[in-house]
Length: 172
Ligand SMILES: [Zn+2]
Image 1 (cartoon, rainbow, N blue to C red):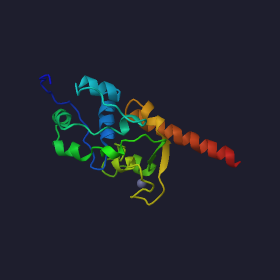
Image 2: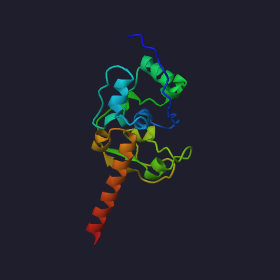
Image 3: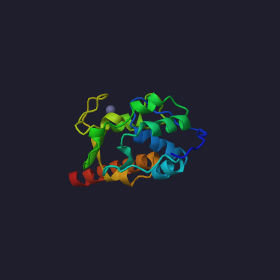
Image 4: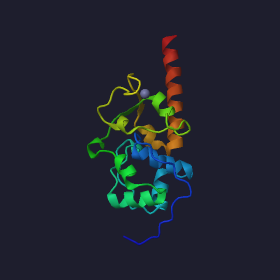
């Protein structure tokens, strides 16, 4: 392990307790207008880990040593990052990713910061715990194609808009 002096990031979005690690790191990348892979490499966090077909939103559990580096960079307690790790048995390929659009865009803690909830990555989830409604889905290729969280959010909105148009045409 090379010894590098760690200078904390000038600005670091805080992770939300219910957020997925990929979502938090995707927001960091967005903050610095980088892709998730670039943000990982620039910060010398080691080899970018292999991911599933859903890309960085479903981020591989990160080793303790890397979490410590990230905690220093973000001026966080390492526990905050340990808590948002993806359980390793969730790391499976999947055709779709379920999510609740209302929960995505209306973060009660900070309305300016949409975030992807960790529990949406559970391969067996179907219903929004908050609203009791069936979850919507996006194809797994959308997060895989998105370079960071901001880009993912605009691709999700675009997908929803197109979906509504298609439904409209089918109906009339
Ligand atoms: Zn919801």
